[in-house]
Length: 474
Image (cartoon, rainbow, N blue to C red; front, side, top):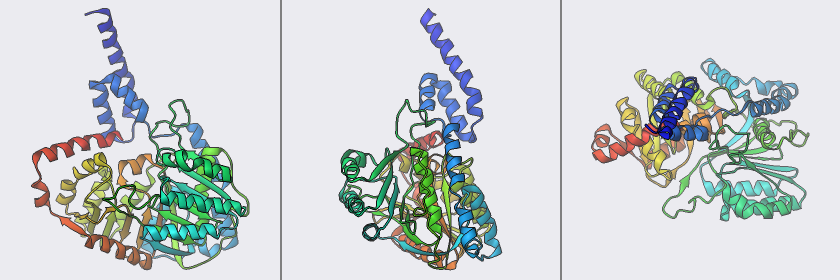
């Protein structure tokens, strides 16, 4: 054995031994085993990949920054002091545990006195957002994963420029990766007009602020004058996403009432997270107004939280379900706790329906997701393949009690890596309205049977199972 071969062998074993105690401390056993296998067989490649995408926790410096923003924006106290009754809305006892869990996970309480409009029409959402921006008097805040430089993006940008010309403060916080076209094409005109445009989670290997480069801010949020908010699954992009053969179908909420202050708090935290500037004037956090009767709770999630907020909540909701659960998600890469929760629900007699797109814009995620179809069908989950465009709505209904709408997919990336934003709507009216839309998606779908799925070619099964092996590494 030559000197260089011996040196290489020693280096390989040093990497294996050094990485073992780091990997066994990971919260996910499956992910730890996957990383151990990669590093054992390819130490140098495995070490490089782990340094690049292996850690989803943020450095303590940025976690402290998040905690500082959270404590500075004390919206709960403000609501309780001005209108105590909206912070304690009446709910059935069986929903109390879910409310408590969501509050402890996301640090935001339940609030009543809101008006919520469900908007499944993407064109209608854009028109309404532009109209509200044109009527803004003090500020417009946009937090977006994808802000495209297409016709839709230009129309929103033009509305922001018009608002600035009226003296309205406009702030845009867009994900550095998802909104690359914004920073290439629309960035300078917005800056010239006085719009503040900030990149969320910039990708820079020399930046100390991130533990891994692919942590993304996947939230979708618009707040206008602290009194109107939009949130859900829709980005600022044409419904076709630049593809003539597919049209995206989303679900957005337009909200007014006290819950807007909680959504404003999410924007303020993320803005402070990236800029170090705290937004806390009376105009940004105005006196909350009762506008309706909807009961809403905001659930942010992401690497700054000690646990996987959305995954924990969905698992708890599945365990609490008594009759029916309907889920829509464009991407489906479930982890073991979620699969077990769905199986347990079915065994208890709960009907579980999952609606996913037949076609996808993400080949790897779609291929990995299809590897789970057999497992879902074997535990008697009703799997529906949506054929009309790409179903991008991320929704859940639990019985006649709870509706969830937001940005989180049913995949490991949304559970563990991305900054996400979801809303819980409590009460039979909200659940019935969302279920109505879900049933429409179901009518546009084909139900897949286990026999049909088992008849697929062996080569396709091999590709799907191989893609599934990559999911824990995310």
